[in-house]
Length: 186
Length: 186
Image (cartoon, rainbow over all chains, first blue to last red; front, side, top):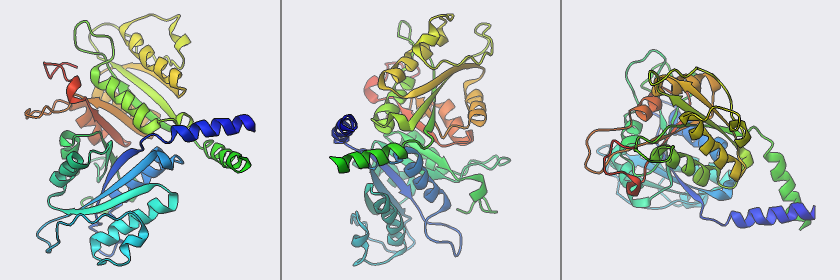
């Protein structure tokens, strides 16, 4: 057990390295009556926790970006940063904040540190701009993916970001069993 | 310290979960006189070790796939599997095997388990077929990426696999400072 403790202490020192900063772009569901996160962004987030971060929560930091599509309403281009569930209590409970709150809560439950913020604009452009500004180690994007017999690629945002984002990009498609009857829904 | 040991033991149990199986597609350099791995596949592999696996080597298993482009020479469509540096000693030291040996050695140095094999065919098709057959949790691909003023997307293999591979795909571009003078080189 003394030996084990020593191994543990070495591992602990190892963990003091800079965490891997993972930016996850999240958006709202387009399906009426569905809770806020889209199927594909929820799936991408959960995959990242289960398959990449696993139990190594201190090795990673999650940066949650929600791009609020413009001309819907007058949302300020604020850079409020949300890092704990408490940060949402005082604030205006708009749709975008509800969305971020969902993901920030999950991060706190599993004990991985996070930051979350909202930007407005065209998602593909804003995501690439934020990558250039924030310099994450990795960008994670959910994608509607391709049905087995569909010829059109739906994930234009992910396609654009794989080409243009200045960091590695992880694209995660929805599971087949999560795909709604209308493939354009998410 | 007793408390620390207990934490360690719990972590140890946690680690007995199935490892995350990461398929990394690797290819040879196209630059004359350069050592075997291409800049982009070496970069993708090293990024995976440093930023994703980090010190959590027992949480991951690396599956190294090299697709030998057809009609160059008559290479058998063998499925020999290489999992340790010793496996290469007796075998024919062809280019593809040298390539896999490079990556298998690195895996052994850092203590992450791996398997490596060669298939022949068109890389983009074979990679997607192997994903469907082997069912990894993640496919990692290096990409030549875009120069700042280039309009053409060079990474046709990664573009195809992001769309068609039946698992999440991580695309990792070369660093700007690693890009050779001729962008088509790798």
